[in-house]
Amino acid sequence: MEALIIIDMQEGYIGNRRGEKAFENVIGHINYVASIFKKAGKPIILVRDIEEGDTEEFLNVVELKDIEFDREVLKVHNNSFWKTDLEDILKDLEVDMTVLCGSAGEYCISASYFGALERGFKPLLLQNGILSATETGGHSLVETKPFVSHQALSYWL
Image 1 (cartoon, rainbow, N blue to C red):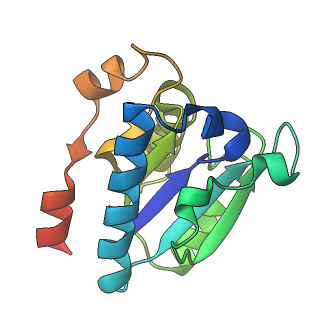
Image 2 (cartoon, rainbow, N blue to C red; image 1 turned 60 degrees about the horizontal axis):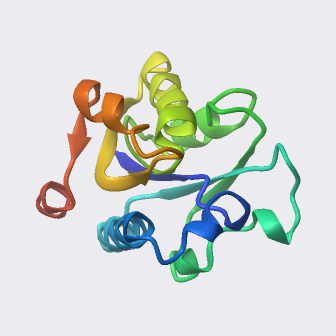
């Protein structure tokens, strides 16, 4: 089974980027793909980084408010699998493939990609669904990791 994992789309980390073309593009793709996953009955896991706190500032960006996620994972490290229950959740849901999207492509997305790979979950990255912390931060991801488009997911699921 496939699962969508949305990572670190939080006000305190990226809310200030609202209005940027990159932010609007990423949030649009995430919302669209989440609707595809929901219609297909596939799980959506939301990951929030609470390393700097678990206050209102670190809640999800309001643009995700309509997404019905199945589980929430709280983390304090870049890798969404490290010292969290994400692996157990995915095993309980019988997930074997993950589609990762969200914030900080060069940090949390990349670390979570390897976390999924090391644990036997086939990770894919959502094309146009990853926001980088820096302008060039996503370049190495694009050159070295497998991406999947919303069109392919729509057909596949």
